[in-house]
Amino acid sequence: MTAAPAPGEKRKTVRVLVVTPTYNEADNVRRHVEAVLARPSAPDVLVVDDGSPDGTGDLVRALAGEHPGRVELLERTGKLGLGTAYVAGFKKALATGRWDVIVQMDVDGSHDPEAIDALLAAIEDADLVLGSRYVPGGAVANWPWSRRTVSWVGNLYARTVLRTRTRDLTGGFKAWRTDLLNRLDVDSFEANGYGYQIETTYRALQAGARIVEVPITFRDRELGESKMNTGIAVEAVSAVWRIRRESAPSTRPAGPGGDAAGRR
Image (tube, rainbow, N blue to C red; front, side):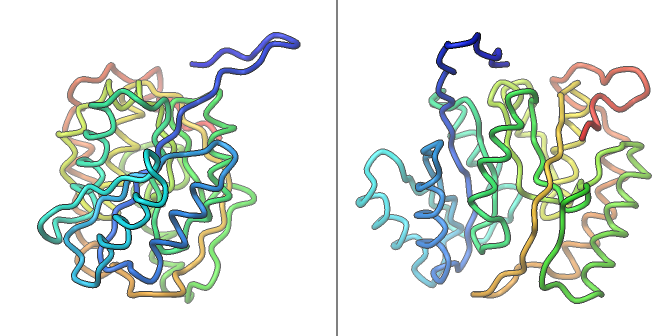
């Protein structure tokens, strides 16, 4: 971890990469990338595109030309899923060793790029920071009551089965210390969708990671089509029990009480 600077000492600059999966996000990708690049921490951006037929990849290539060295496209040949997109992005980022923190977030406006600042501030004292809808100050905007209920019940269910105090297990806005990701076997992550978010946070807990949740406001997308469907929700429910049964590869055990962090 980065130690707090002594009075008058300049804090070490943290190198940040934002990894964002895309599929048919031509309406959103330019606005997202430019908003991320404008943050005070000067993050770089890696877009993992699943062969979008709407030209998303071409737009990212154009952005890479406009922002040399700060925007990169990892293009895949088909719609392979959210979880595998993050695994591919994390592996590419870790192989270079260029970044101290990797932020994962959605491209569709659900995750506000300005909130990156709060996640990075919290990671001074954490290995993993979750942008949380379900801690005091967190909120969900523009969702119908039915979707709010499914999300809240899904989180309660996952917390109960996995016996953790972490409030938002299904959220996808996270900041990871790269040394934590290097300790985890990212190739072992099997779930997709919400299940992927649950699995990665739980594996971090099993590894003894210091986890902090910071409040965010999650907003439903304004442009493009949601990728959420019934199959993703069902997969998450079944994945929770598999995640609980399987031991985490390449990690050290959680602390006393079975919940290595669960801090907020």
